[in-house]
Image (cartoon, rainbow, N blue to C red; front, side, top):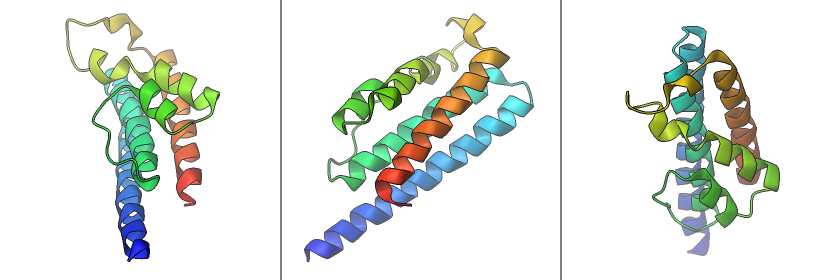
Length: 130
């Protein structure tokens, strides 16, 4: 029966990866449209869902937080993945509210965020061996 439990974790993890890939596509579309706040938000969401997939895959369950530093530390992600996650953190909330620091929503920030989220997602997929 242990194999079935592992299979369920793998299936759930892959579903989270697929959602992360969908968010990455949205981030790219919004970037191309010049909607940098949306591109930043979906870049952060890409990384968050990828990291959560690894948590589930490793049997740690779903961690209900948006804080990418703690998510990546809990799964012993390499330092560069942790650092990229920390840089993406502000975009989860800053990009959604008009009273937040809007000067960070520019093309350069979006380029970096897309790059970081792609690197994090790639690492996460490697952990799941997909």
